[in-house]
Length: 325
Image (tube, rainbow, N blue to C red):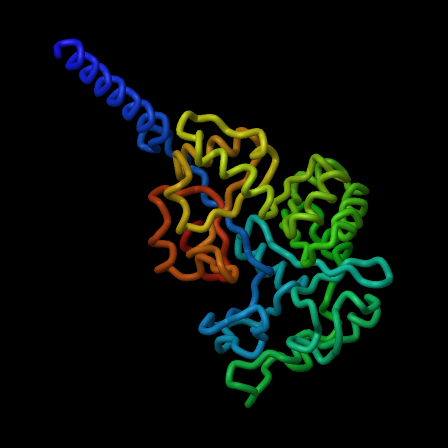
């Protein structure tokens, strides 16, 4: 009986030591507070926002925008200028390859929702896309008025135009298909850029194009569902030890706030661990559906105290003045 009691005693001592180790190794209480400001990622630049009620993958979001508070249209050079002027650190853009070898900056797979054009975006020449009015379909009152009609002609830029216009700014490039050839094509285009320029770029999208791009351009930071899983699943299992899986190196992680409790050491320890392997962490609002962002002052109240990691927002003009005052 005495031996059994000693065994139980040592079991609880070891359990207490292990618990203390896990806590001390993952708490942010004893990490140094950084004086740096949060990294702000402006989704599609400064864009018109819309209500999410009943939204599906087939919803034309241009037909449900809120009453416009600014004159900018997403994925245009003016909207990117406005986002950077509002102190965005990174702007997210969408790329669509064209049949004449360009990359158009445009979100939608088809043209009918936002523009006066028809058909699949990537089945056009860039010259044809340049003729379209990309503000044609926006309405905040169920089609009674179209406040941007006639104001978006010629505003669809190419990727080359964007990177030339903003030679030093940072971009997150979104591949809109799951075609591995598209990743290879984008990788070949980006491989012509200097190393210093590539350090300011990252790419995300479907598993297959991201994998093929990484083969072409292994040094660039990327993200896909596959890269997220290969990093975070083992980290959730053993990250309490401080170990960072090799799959986490040189990637980008978009963490919905709903799942932060699974990230050992979140926020400060987790962020520091990922930064040590050249991985960027972006916090996304809610559960990550439909590009939810931290878009209001009320949203920002949910951020961890002294949080200085990345933040996804659809309203850089609203939150930047609060976080970077």
